[in-house]
Length: 414
Figure 1 (tube, rainbow, N blue to C red):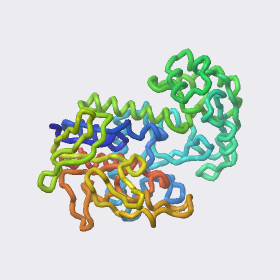
Figure 2: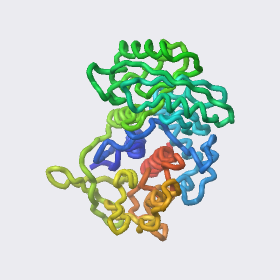
Figure 3: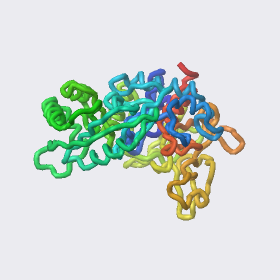
Figure 4: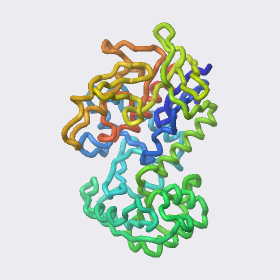
């Protein structure tokens, strides 16, 4: 029996498990798959849009509506949680200030706000007058350098100044004879110093003049100093631009957090789904793992439920539009999806605000505001009140609610 069972291995689950282990708790983390960090940009968004683009995310957090998950956490706690995670990961993986957003180029040439980013990205922070040389690799189809440069050149920086950009291409196979390499293929090749040197030489030959050389985010998966090697060889700043999933920067964060969780003594169980629970009075005694050899019951004193939301299958919608949470049967803010699906794709998507309401400790509550189970806490995407993909708040919510849950289990913030 562990002190705590954490369900889910996304950013919220890994953060909660690490925080609990650091406080001396014995932790079992169980997950049906590797979580969603591999789908992410490899950054930590706190709040990007309100719907206007946000430059000071903590100020914006303090002004959210009462329905938003941040409202019960507060800007100070959000800043503390995100800062703690950044310190744990270290400046080789995350840099920045929770009070200020970077504005970084994307794989379509837009400018995207985020609070913490990998050090290989931040030279791309958009300020008026900055020029970019966007260099693509002919064999890497998911980095359209011409499109990125063209859109950057049409964009304004948040300070109102113009940006300039041009594109260039290199021809450098990652593996001989491979017709359709993935970003991960290139990232693994970059872990070899000689291949990274050949890459930098090819880039230097075509980049031309610019303040920053923008490159696909494939500069190593295990070796964290590849970007420095390339920048030093070019003699100027570079910035990585994340590609569509699987995301190499997201994998870097996942690999680092998973290694830290395991090193902290967390028992990691992957590949089976949690399908139910056993009650004990008004609390949870155990959760049921659908293992290959038959159901297993994982007992603990406390539980952190961080399974994600609709995108990860944590919430179900059946053919009649009924919305349910299938593991604990938790009360949701809505149970009928039909009126929540808009006719306009780009309009507000109220369905994605559906989830669990919590008390100030992060425990799911019923309509009267009473905790459903006093030893069950929720974190991340299952919490109601935000369109995370629209306002770019998902990472901050995941981290802050995971830290909140862990700290209430361990007796308070450390």
